[in-house]
Amino acid sequence: MNYCMKVIDKSEIKLVKSLWEKLNRLHLEDAQYFKEHYKNFTFEKRSEKFMDIEDNNIRIELITDNQTPVGYCISTIEKGVGEIDSMFIEEKYRKYRFGSKLIENSLKWLKENDCSKIQVAVAEGHEAVFGFYQKHGLYPRMTYLQLKE
Image (cartoon, rainbow, N blue to C red; front, side):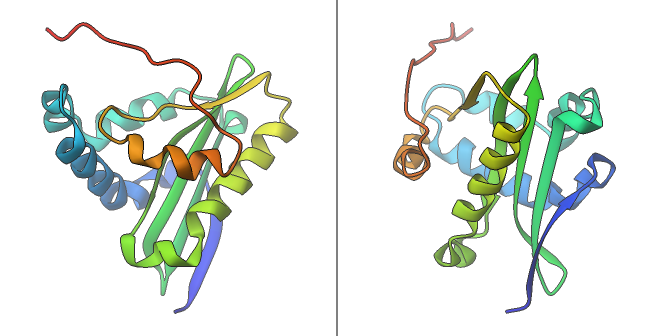
């Protein structure tokens, strides 16, 4: 394994596209109530939010193995609130604790930027990741319900 962790510019966000699409498929499989959202959700649509954020308020960290993307984490700051927006690690690389490294790096960056609150939204059906986030100090605070139309 020849891995590299690096922060990339948002202009390079397409480097995470294949990984994000795997995450979206995982959410589609896990979702009980909002499968149609994930069926219709595209990387391009998801990326629109990130393109509107000032460069100093977004952090994209990419992990590659022999230059092939194997993991990423996108964190943002909006109005002083930090968020871990999206994270995915290829399954065979999870044993190397890359997810923990990405979260730790993101939390450090968000704290250095004096965020008044730091949060992560977990998709319905994907609650199995709560334990992972709790290891890093992120706990469920409130559950939002959405009208299904």
